[in-house]
Image 1 (cartoon, rainbow, N blue to C red):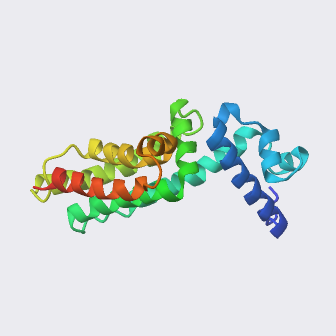
Image 2: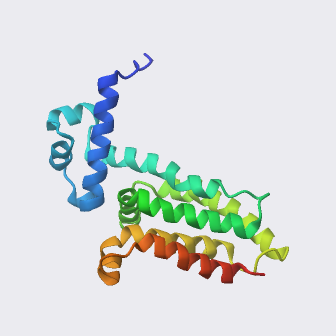
Image 3: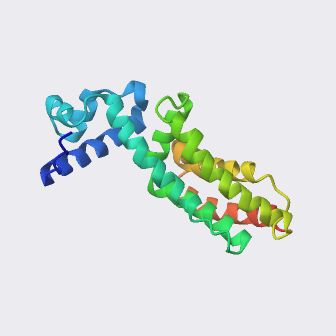
Length: 203
């Protein structure tokens, strides 16, 4: 088999442009609502030029999701079993909250995929994601059993962190409509969640 030639600078630039445009379109329209024409227009490329790099809408979507999963898992990977338990859990919560600030489109892309039954990610969710969550859940369980934090179900603790942080990206319009102008939802969330988890985790 002939090895693939390295991509040129222009090819790398065009692929990056397509993925950035696709992220915008998919996060706004969802997979089903998005079209190749919309992505090409957002990228400033012709549709034939886009198809030179990606053979289908699904291929673009899978490329985005594959890169996103690595980003999504990084904050949980950073939880240090040798660290101070409450500080490590709180740091994870804050990393996830900051991702809602910095990566709202990516959060909505991920949420849309899961809401559709994860047809393009189910294998990764059942393998890479599950393995990491199980690994960190075992760490949290050991902290709890040693009396270093309050008794908690570690999996549901992790789920609650996801729910209480990603909500601010996925439901940004709703949150801002309820809070009204002049308020920063994520700054306020950080203060509230600090209090919530301090009380929840105190042994």
